Amino acid sequence: METLIDISQKQLIEKCCKNDRKSQAALYKTHYQAMMKVCLRYSGNREDANEILNSGFLKVFTSISNYNFQGSFEGWMRKIMVNTALDKIKSEQIQKQNTLVVEDYSAYENEIMVENDAVKGISSEVVLGLVNQLPLMSRSVFNLYVFDGYSHREISQMLGIKEGTSHWHLMNARTLLKEKISHPQTQIFN
Amino acid sequence: MEQIYISIDDFIHNGIDNLAIEMPVGEWEKMSALLDIELPAKKQFKNFRNIIFWGASLLIVALFVYQQWNRTVSNKAILSCPERKTAECKRIVSPTVLKSEEPSTTTTVDVSLKPIINAPPIIKDTIKPKLKSIELPKHSKTSNNYQKTSSSPNNISKNLQDEYSEKDQVDYFGIASDSIIYDNIGKVKKKKRK
Image (tube, rainbow over all chains, first blue to last red; front, top):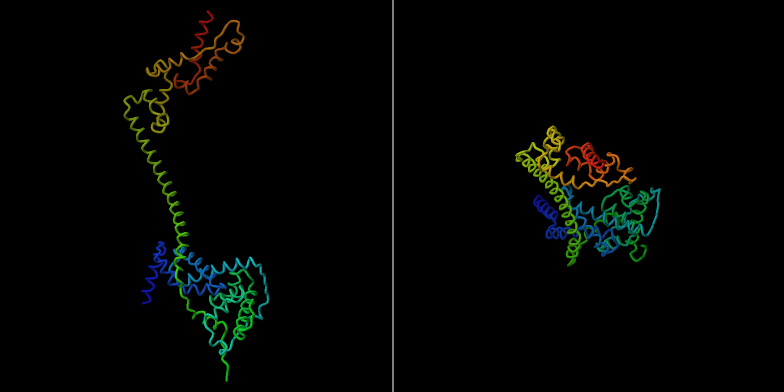
């Protein structure tokens, strides 16, 4: 069964290489949800997420012939989406000119735990809302580290920041999220 | 009662994973419109590049074929010429073809060095009107200018050389020397002195 799915996906990709609109539509609809989740995590709102998604899919369709059928196609697409989101974040970051440099990050290594009772009943939409309310750089580092599995060294290279700064942003994101979950009424973000 | 703790990372991860997102109506149409703008443009550029490539290739092939055809036609002209060893034939066939097709230089040299008297009638006819049209400088005994400028045969010869290029002299006299011109002028001068 799995092989059949792979074959159909391979055919779909091959047709997309030939610029077949129907196959492109099928691919877009199949992966829309997964890719949208990625974009929503990185962007602060739905509009920005849509922009990133469409830019990402454009890159996917224009460079789909470069995919060599080795490794997961969804993983390949996800990487493109993440890079597109990071490009947008970096351009926004340049405009803001925020320069936080942290050299000693030993204090930011601890993982933060929350009480199970406190998180009960929190829906996925609320969780997404919590992530979206995080400051831009902290949100990006949190997403890259927790969801996409990048190391701090890789994150620092991707975002053009110090490794210590990446540690600080992750800790900051965790702390802010915990505060928000424990005290939902307080406005601690921004 | 003991409290159970959960990692904030895991909690957020699970929360996002369980998120259900539906594709809004008209989303693909937006994407399709974007693709219509971007992808055909790329295709056009590709086509343009292909046209340039194939055009250049065809031009090179056409030039090569034309060169080969031209060479074959010239060969035929030389072979079909009944008197191809004579000067007439040499005149018909262009010098470049002669050079490339008949590497034996002996015949070419022979023809070019033949005196005018022995040249075929066509060459004679072409030389005659040319000789008539040569204007000798008018001279008088009192004219100092003539004495200065045109008295010596060498000067006259020079004037003629200026008027007719070296190539013309070779073509019409058969040789590239000043001797024939000098002789002709010498005769004229003698008559005038009498």
